Amino acid sequence: MKPGPLSRARSPVSEARTHPYAARALALLLGGLATLAATARLGAAPQEEPASRPAALASSSLVVYATGQSLGSLEPCECVEGMAGGFPRRLALLARERRVRPGPRLVVDTGDLTGKAFHPRLLETKTRAALELLARSEAVIAVGDKDLRIGVSKLRELADATGARVVCANLAEGGKQVFPGSVSLSLGAQTWRIVGLLDPLLCPPELSCEDPAKALARELQPGERGVVLFHGSARAAAALAAVKGVELIVCGEDQQRNRPLKTIKGVSLVEVVRDARSVARVELDSQKATSKLTYLPLDGRVPDDRWARARVDRYYQDVAGLPEPPRQPTPAGGSYTGAQTCGGCHVPQYQVFKKTLHHGAQARVTKKDPKRAKLGECTTCHVTGFGFEGGFVDMKRSAHLAEVGCEACHGVGERHAQKGGGRGFGVKTGFPGSWKPVCVGCHDSTNSPNFDFEKALAKIKHWKDR
Image 1 (cartoon, rainbow, N blue to C red):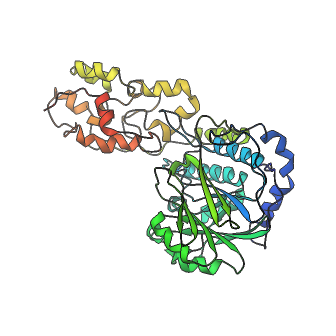
Image 2 (cartoon, rainbow, N blue to C red):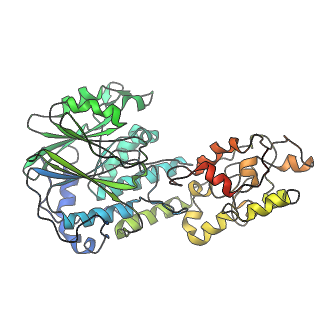
Image 3 (cartoon, one colour):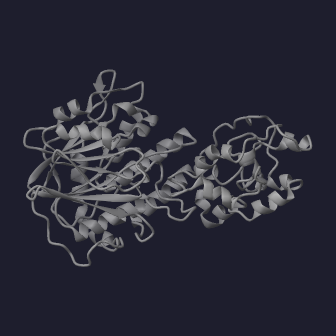
């Protein structure tokens, strides 16, 4: 399925001068009005939005919609409460914004499209899907350091194949710039230059990163108004406000909370929140020399865009049959026995475990969302020993490991059980403090928003204080 045209409730966006993306923009433009009726039915209004339709923005104004660091989450898995984000919601929200806010607009993303990947083809397939979804929204995309894991050539190839506008002005390989540095767009009565930059501190060792300010000054042309997409921290991005012509800097690197708009030397700076849990809407008005920032949450109040929903579902189909990577031997030897075996001796502890959400986790996921239950990237956090010899395989062959059992935290239990208990024999010591790296490996800010390690420990406590 190829990305279809975008619906619009505004005048066409034309590119000010020829560059590699001109043909793609024209193709999207020609089909734009065809899907207006379809997308008009999508999107629930965020709570802060007025019910009435606002007047069109002045020609000197621009509305920028910014996201970043989706980190492989094409959509939230909804394993825990409070998860937000996802491309189906994002595209629905943008469709609604086109209807209620006519006028010049720009959609941007600061990169890091993919997160963990357990198979090279999975990484490629997910990156392709993310780029197609971003191309559908006509986003201009900065290169993130995690995007480069797939390789410069492959990332360029996927960008070309999907029509995604990926830009980075200061990234080079062998002394040659590897991506277009910017995109120039005519939006309303103004010409805007959107420049992508990567923080040199995040640059992979096999590549080189020019000083961002120098690369930015080279890209901006006289008379153009500059929007900078900086993949890096706000602190590092602040220096770019001194470059003549810059009006807005969009940045982000593992930002956990929505932060207020900053103004540096008259330049607006906004940080996008990681996991694309919300869309930052920035309203620029040069006549009044003011900017306004609103965060539009991508939570359950926003329905799925139907095209994006179908594209994400196709991703699940594309990766469902990928072979599992080679399994690794267990760190301390031996094999997994399953929590029930542990419960033969540790009866009180096992009874506590059975009352937690760790018990039977994979069975619940399988019942709720069978297509996700088959994905290794999801399975690893719902079972015991995934990816290791003797660990979870599937619900038929290893049902006794289809949960986050004792050995997920305590270590492989076969030798411990054979010796009749005792310390060592593959079982970890030093709990509960030593468990934190294990816990946050799955309960990270993407999969468990607002996770509190100490509170979580209290819910699963099955030991005596010493």
